[in-house]
Image (cartoon, rainbow, N blue to C red; front, side, top):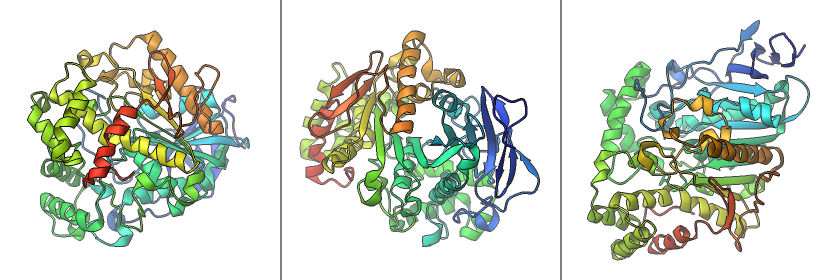
Length: 519
């Protein structure tokens, strides 16, 4: 018999694959490390996710399972303080579920896909706990683990079936939700998929994928790097060959014989080989092959059945500060270096004028500040705005926002950096105490903004409209007003908030530079 969090017994859920026994945490029922696919080990490395065989008896679901193998450093980093911690293991295809009650009430469902530059992260990170959403919004929340780094993004077999293992995992997880979430009190017909950074790129890919049609009703795209130039299979073969050399393996069979620790070790070498000055390092990328990933995720929400999906999209004001503001290797960047980097996008003739345009927006700016604003626009802000513009032109408007609250951490150098909106969206700052980038925030400002954002997300998941009584009126983005919600100490709806960047980057489109975003 199902158990409610108000009862004394531990909650249980019955699935076709077996029975689960979870725990009560913070007033909600939680089921951890639930398998949604077979362990991708041995011959299943770099193969599409396969069905899980199930289990006998009642499976304990009270402890997190291993996260996907990834690089890890004791002490973390100066921004997030770390984005994934042991244990790690190949056998990582599990998910966590938070629900107000295991009953027959069909609640809206929120599926969270973590980001991490395609190389780090976990659905089990405390900051991604679904507890606040489940409790505050009467939602069923699912967070997933999936293959990342070399195990998720390489295809050493070099065939159509084995490309993009990460995406096969996420599709399998979404199918699991569609088939089983009713057993946890969720409604499979009201599923919102949300993600941040690489997880937002995944969200866009899932929303427009033919294998998930009808399984996604809404999406929330937080800082999607839609400006990434994703490779086709031919372009990615060189990177795979370089990785094989670094791993000391002749072929896919040799790689399958290596422990995951050696595979992750070789990933560090690929970072060094593929890094280019002035670009966000991305040694592992989705591959647009026309089959497993039919199109660039930047276009996935513009065609076919995906146009009927409700969309909320946003970015932080200074995304790129996350990766560059604290890097001493960029502190002494020269105007000439940055102008040369601008020329990659705008062409050599326009580069000096574009540099001047960026510099005018930040009086007293250094060359590295111009570079960070350029990268923010190229990867995040401008392609997000172009998606909003394209959807609006097709009569399918989106809800757009920009997160503007700067953090005083590190002397204010981070500004409103990539990832900073996450604890506000989840409204669970106690779970982010390890993160240096939250140091110094005024608690009253912090908590007030978190209240507004968290409830806007809940409202969108429940209704497709983020408005709620404690938020200024938020209109969808259209071609006339281009309304964008500005989340700062004072929350304000502004028209064409990103207009300067949008207009400036029209030059990149007309100059047809190869690195220009697709939308």
